Length: 204
Image (cartoon, rainbow, N blue to C red; front, side):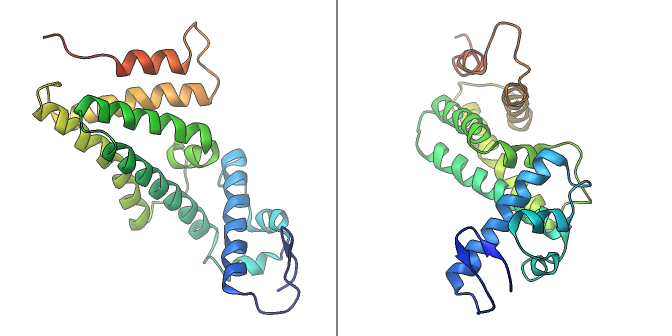
């Protein structure tokens, strides 16, 4: 293998396990940025290889094709997102505080990983999602659904758990994505809106 991964000179020697993982992560990072800014259809493996500093054929040692690389990026993003949500839910015992913690993590993830967030939720994607990707997407919603169900069981929310979870998710997602797109321009910023949303409790 020829080329460089950051400051690692590959030459023709066999890579160590650590170098292999570092090189794979470099591919994922460069591809994520390209897909997020240019779109799946526009980006080619040649363009990704050019960013990485290797030949296009080298990428096939790590991924089956462009679709496999794209799905892997999205799966890893959803899985990391789900793990952070699970940790947030576990950090609070009060049902409404748990929902608030989930919202904060949701918003923070978009701020810290904007490219990953766009690829997770972009409307125009490639072919049908793989089973792994579908499962990763379900996991990312489960924490919100469980927290909403707990709040209903505790009597602090009312309604159907699935419907209420979807309402919370879509409201939260709308605020976060509008902020990410720079569209919150009518006198309220993301912080203002999320504080209002999280502080709402049903009247006694």
